Amino acid sequence: MSKRDYYEVLGLGKEASGDEVKKAYRKLARQYHPDVNKASDAEEKFKEVKEAYDVLSDDQKRATYDQFGHIDPNQGMGGAGGADFGGFGDIFDMFFGGGGQRRNPNAPQRGADLQYTMTIEFKEAVFGKETEIKIPRTETCDRCSGSGAKSGTKKETCSTCKGSGQQEVVQNTAFGRIVNRRVCTTCNGQGAIIKEKCGKCHGSGEVKNQRKINVKIPAGVDEGSQIRISGEGEAGKKGGPPGDLYIVLRVKTHEFFEREGDDIYCEVPLTFTQAALGDEIEIPTLTEKVKLKIPAGTQTGTYFRLKGKGVQRVRGYGQGDQHVKVVVVTPSKLSDEQKNLLRDFSELSGEHTHDKHQSIFERMKKAILGD
Image (tube, rainbow, N blue to C red; front, side, top):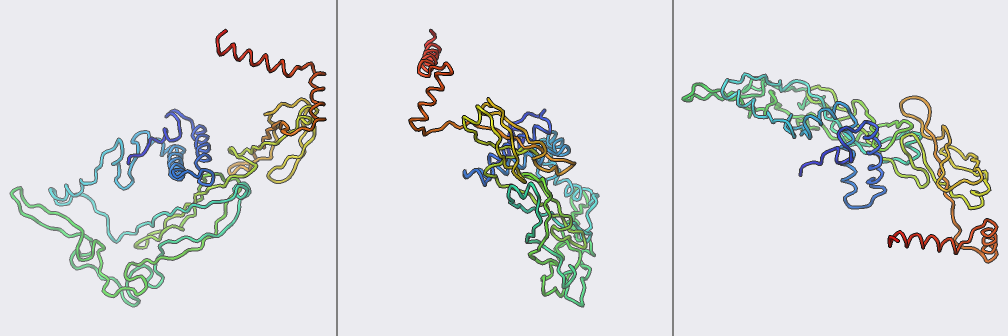
């Protein structure tokens, strides 16, 4: 099934700025996070959003995507907008006797990168943590040092291909002499033969192990952040360097705090009396409780800013802010005495509750009927 356009996934146009890409990703990541959204397709949508963000947030990847569209890394430029040149090597070999340059089968090869997804608590993302993880990975066999040969023995150069890993098949045709190169069937393209294999890795030079790795998560990371640990990926081949390990972070939601970038948001209830007369209330922050002065006449939905009470910035200095939204709570259960006091207050304020509601309904009726 073809992939959706990355801009469409994030609900953006191609002219979207980097900040708009980041903002759209955070919104959708919260919406489809598996810890929050229990829908059957939430996991897939979360991955789709993450993939789109990884490309569009990187200037080089985004430029490539804008030019070529979705590219299959296993087929060179064989994605949307590109041509697949995968078969030209064989064609040149057939008609021109192998003019192309072949990779040495015994050359060092870098190991594959690994990805590990880690779920952490909200405050662990804010303050950082140090932990240990276990990952399954391929490592160089310690018994044969990756050669695949039994201790005391060594590989022998393949007599069929003379170490090149390729065989030449010559055909005389009406068009002339054609040389076709193929993977050597004797050594399977390795260029060498192992007569006595290592008893631990059985000739592969590699073994599967559970690797313990200490991970330090810096303070201020967010949903989708990646931590790169150099050299902790799969083992290289033929003496090549190992790949890297990429840890992708998922952050659980918090029951009170919400996060937007380096800023923290929360809602605090106020009684009618507190909002009308003003008060000083206690607000929880990420680290402590602080006093917040509520002016008299504060309206529901008003925001107050607590400077420097947000998240520490991963890159750079300082911290974000905490934004407190106050919500005036209307009491649902009143005693007779409380009701009478409110009626007295209404009369003193010049309010006529019943008449006012009637006038509102009348105005609504006129608006609907067009009178």
